[in-house]
Length: 477
Image (cartoon, rainbow, N blue to C red; front, side, top):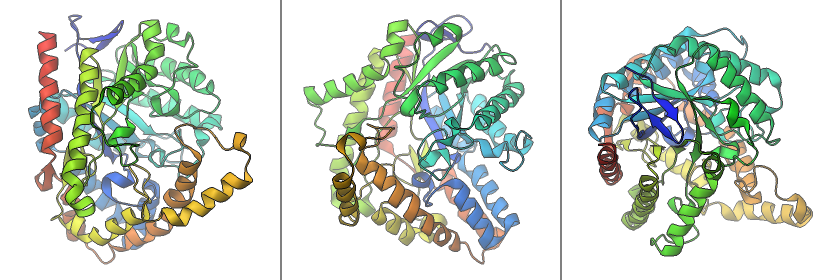
């Protein structure tokens, strides 16, 4: 089978026939995220805390079983049944390298990644490998697993050297696998210099191409895959390369400025936001891939009777975005395949051991607004507003907008540092304490909560995705 290639503005197969990749991100798996699986803070924190509570051996056992159950053949079959054809696999560098033993490959990292790639290929599903977490943190968010709001990856060359080394090792391992549609070397960079990113991309491109001339490379824009304004003519040296935007809309989140009614004005705003992100690619005749996008959804246990109306609006946002993408024949990967009920195509049932065990803790976590993604801080806003007001009063207006503004406004920065880093850190031990005294049989039962058989399907979302996957087939015939 031939490799997927970039040809001008399109992805093509071995016969040079246009191939439109449409699927989802496998997030929360080999790169765990707090809102996806219900823990506070960052992945490295909960792994350390669980090892303290149950011991290193049982902690390793639990996370290995979690990885095993989270994506299995039933998941691949279901995904394929929707007509989707590509999964973007997010992974953490820590599976392949240890901070205390840098540049020594941990081959056990390939155990589950190889397994899922092979499962997907068995069912005719392409994969894109996404380094979601880099040493030091390549962005300012929780999902870079650095535990800070500073993206230190851009401040220390050695962090960058290690990622160049890692992609060399990954390229050696996967160079012959044509079911991998491509490599996504760095998720959502936030480089405050704007130019260090371009130098790094030149290095990572060369490191991959020295070993693997075949696979397509998907490069994220700066500032969370939204800004290509400093890329200039860099693309002239990058062959078989596509460019990744992440096209989230504020209308799909609790912080939406207004109810979404699909008005002409609102749909124009959707289109303009999307066009602005891909403007540089269109000017240069380059291929665009939407690596992440999608609304979050209300839940009965939190939003009550308002759930249906909220989700009706979110599904309309989804449909209107897809209408834009279909007209442009855009490849996309919606975020997210599986979680505990906030955004996933499938989600863990409330009746499972995991959700039963953490029911009260999850409610507390939501009330305290310690997850940044899709946050509703209404229950605690009065506690933090005086601090926001104090900063606004004492800091000159021209100094209040710090990078990555406008993605992070002053209010968002205060929230990230106080709720999502500080308060979250204090709750890590409480999360781990839920496992105290458990043996391996009990730990296995908790981990198995994430198996497909124990998940529910978000039928409204999946119906829309299936309808749009069929539109792609019609376009390709």
